[in-house]
Amino acid sequence: MDLKICVLPGDGIGPEIIEQAVVVLEKVCEKFGHNLTTEEAIIGGVSIDAHNTPLTQDTIDKCLASDAVLMGAIGGPKWDKIDKSIRPERGLLGIRKALGLYANLRPAKLWEELKDASFLKDSVIGNGLDIMVVRELIGGIYFGEPRGEGVDENGERYAYNTMVYKESEVKRIVKLAFEIARKRGSKLHSVEKANVLDVSQLWNEVAEEVSKDYTDVDYHTMYVDNAAMQLVRNPGQ
Image 1 (cartoon, rainbow, N blue to C red):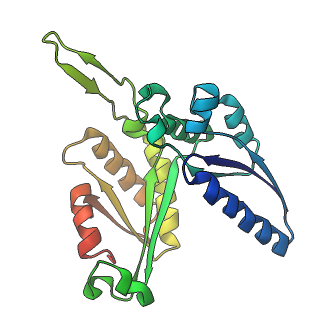
Image 2 (image 1 turned 180 degrees about the vertical axis):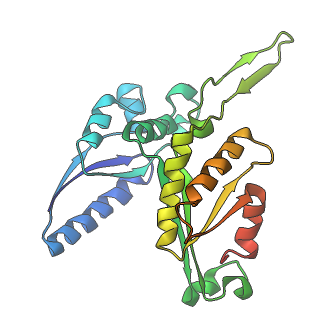
């Protein structure tokens, strides 16, 4: 198999980590007979230093022309006080949007043999923990418009953001979560704030509709504040 990976070392510890990650990739490809090609591009603070923007079209094009992207870290104290419109983090949001990276999969696994290293009680950990958090990345408040800041008639500063989700955006992330749940014990919790947010009410409605196609999955909804508590009280649920 021929594989092309765009490498984005980024800032801080990123280059150090990515250098070793590429070494591992090369060894894996060598062992299993794959042909690996890597192409490096810049993003974040180093891109600001070079081009006064955290994400260039050249970097986007290189990522789009690759089979996968391997990224290190973005940002650092050096760029904390620059204009917020070109902060390093804008590069991360931009590459997510440009590549259509709508799903962030965050596995959290704790083996029973390592439970002594956890701050949770033995009674909570049980035989170990295995959780997958599926997070939507390119909708919602991070990308909603309008956004900005201003000064009112009394001279007081204010700022605002807009949280928007389309039905199609909710449906695709929920479907992915159900598909993953099917492979991981068939249990899924949708975490939101539907008692306050209209966006969360739409989220719940769409998720409920999608759930009808996954009757084999044990599906529940949960408010985000309760979910935070349940993660430390009973994460195995």
